[in-house]
Amino acid sequence: MKKVIALLAINVLLLCGHTVMAQNNVSQDSTQIITNATDSQTVVTASEDSAISAVGLPETTDSGEVLPEEKGGFHNILKTKFIEGTAGFMSLVALALVLGLAFCIERIIYLTLSEINAKKFMEDIDAKIAAGDIDGAKDICRNTRGPVASICYQGLLRITESIENIERSIVSYGSVQAANLERGCSWITLFISIAPSLGFLGTVIGMVMAFDQIRMAGDISATIVASGMKVALITTIFGIIVALVLQLFYNYIISKIEHLTSQMEESSIAVLDMIMKFKLTHNEDDIRQK
Image (cartoon, rainbow, N blue to C red; front, side):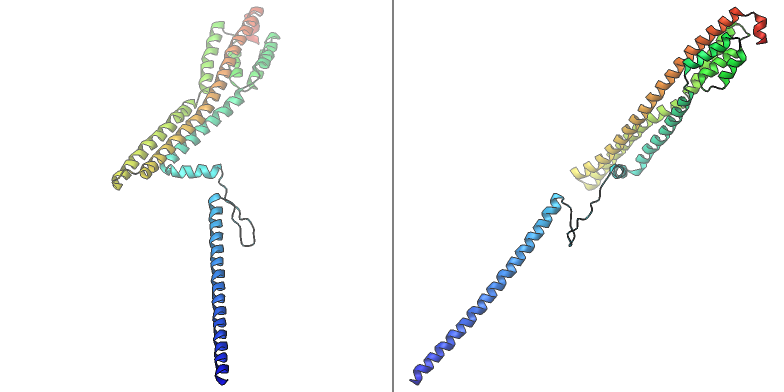
């Protein structure tokens, strides 16, 4: 009887030991599962962050706020390309643009101030000459800006001379005024020619630099060739853009010069006709007194 009870006690103790070991194993397995799950969540989170970064979605802080993105405007893009094209030649191209625009602006202001209502002006001059008020016509010319008024004034100053001398004086003074209108245009054409030339020079030097890099590397690499070609072509692009901008301004200036020149020619013919009529209706003594 005592032996049976002892065997039953031993069996109970062994059963309890197996139960405790099984519980410990279950706990360890559960901990391992939780750890694996946590690691998997971390991997998934990292993958999501990588996907967000790859797609380009806005980043967020721990509190959920969206971080502001840096925006690159036209000014930043232009500055970046300017630096990539090497500052040496790009500075020369920029200098050609600035100087060319300075001459263009000066010519546009001068030509704009030289324009007047030629039709109204000639009507006023005609009314004064027809009334015999030569001094009044001269005052109108002196108080009016532009080459048209200057040509008419030169004709009225020599009203006492022969019509041939008056015509010769008007033609000569018209040539002087036309030269004043075209003053500075040669500099604009110079910068129009210089800008692309500087760009092409930068292209040639960039090609030489690319070949030097290939020689130093000892191998023809697409990366080396592309970097040298990029620098070369950027200078060419900027040079052509500068030339196009200056060419547009130059054509506008030429159109204004042609308009003023046509006004000068029409006004010179009209003032000669007015003086001729005045001479036919007045004798020489009256003309000299006026």
